[in-house]
Image (cartoon, rainbow, N blue to C red; front, side, top):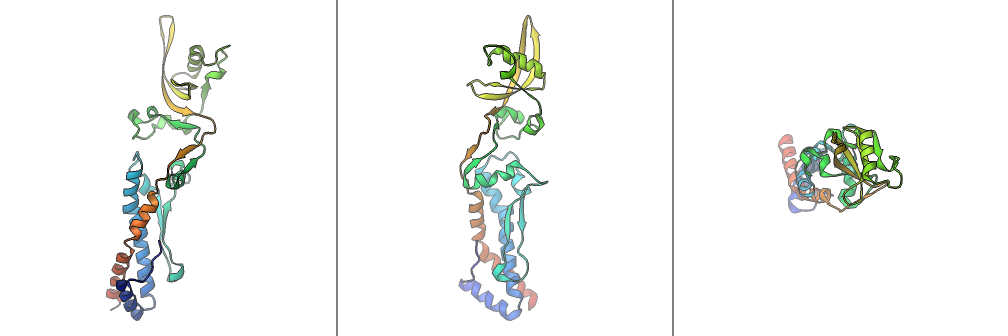
Length: 245
């Protein structure tokens, strides 16, 4: 959003500021730009994000967004920016926001969660700590279970689950034939049978990309805050006038 000094109200304050001090006008413009950037971070962006996304972590957008305020007195190069920077270095959720803003493919989505990976088996909750993909370091593949002539048989699944053990993980076929990562919840012998209880926590497809629709939440929030910039400038101009009188 560019700030053009062309309305009657803004021109009137511009003339007053230029007569007061060399720095009064640049300082007022700088303050207005920073007001708009912080308004995006604190107000319009969280509101647009709430409408566009399922809020699994209500503080995610505020916590991972950052304002780089305008500095100095050179009006022609003065700018304030607001965007997302992952805390502590790298965060895949933050990295994916660019595609979610404009639409496109998010690479590296071989594993996609089911609701059973989330707290309370609910889509609007965060992934359980124990089910986060970074915590899963050993997975047994039923296709390599050594059962001849029927790689996807129940026998192969049971053998793989027993090998993985309670709390372990198995990749096999889900209810619709898709590849699924299961968490082994229990293994029991009942009569002459081995009874396995599992949870399907991820669907799996090697090299899969996730296609996402554009949300435009940052663009609309920036335009909304940008629409307030004239008011921000007048407030900053009045502050400078009161200070320098």
